[in-house]
Amino acid sequence: MGSRDAAFAGLQASRNGESLLARDMEEGVRLARENPQSGVVVRLEGEARPWNPGAITGGRVWADGLPDGAGTQPSETVPPEVLAQHAREAEVQRELDKRAEEAVREMARSGDEPAAGAEVAMQDVVRDMDRVKEMPPSPLTLPDAPEERRRDEAVSQVVHESAQRDRLQQMERETVRVPEREKTLGGD
Image (cartoon, rainbow, N blue to C red; front, top):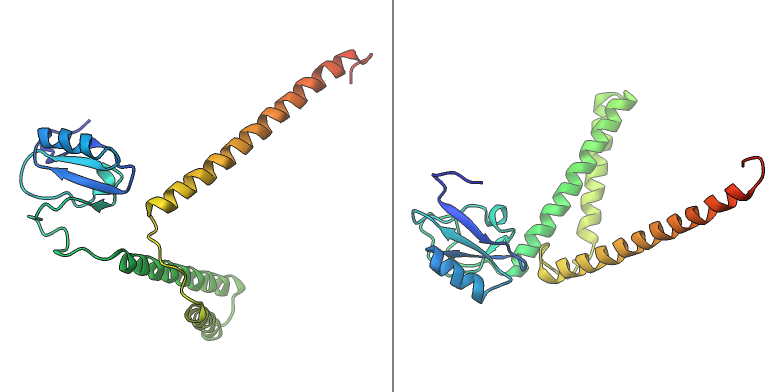
C-alpha cells in the first residue's frame, strides 16, 4: 500500500495522541523504540512536514522539535488551555448552527409566513446564545486528551462486557427453553 512518489511513511501508530517525525528509517526505528506510545512518521524525501499526522499515525500533535521547513506548524506551541477553549467554542458554534438549521426547517414545514418564521428563528438563536453565555465555563480539557481517551475506553469496555454478558444469559435462557418445549406432548 503506497506509491513510489510518497514523501512519508508511517512506522508506528500513536497511542498517546502525539506523533514524531524522523529524518530517516534508522532514526525512525530509534524513536519508535524510545517512544513506544507515540506515533512515528519517517520522512522519505524532501524537508516538508506532513499536513495531517492524524491520518498517518492517529496522533494529532507533533511532539518533536524539528524545525518546520514548509510552514505547516506554528513557530511556537499553543498552550493546551487555548486549544481546549477553541474546541469548546467550536462545539458551541456547531450547536448553534444546528439549532438555526432546525428552526429554518421547521419554518419551511409549517408553511409560516417567511418574515414571521425568520423572526422566530432569530429569537431562538439569540435565546440560545444568551443561554450559552450564562453557562459557567467548564474546566477546559482537550477533546483528545489521553485521560479522556482512557476513560472513554474503560467505559466502552465495561459497556461491551455488560452487553456480552446479557447476550450470553439470553442464549442460556433460550437453550433452557428448547428442551422444555420438546417435553410437552402435542407441540407448543
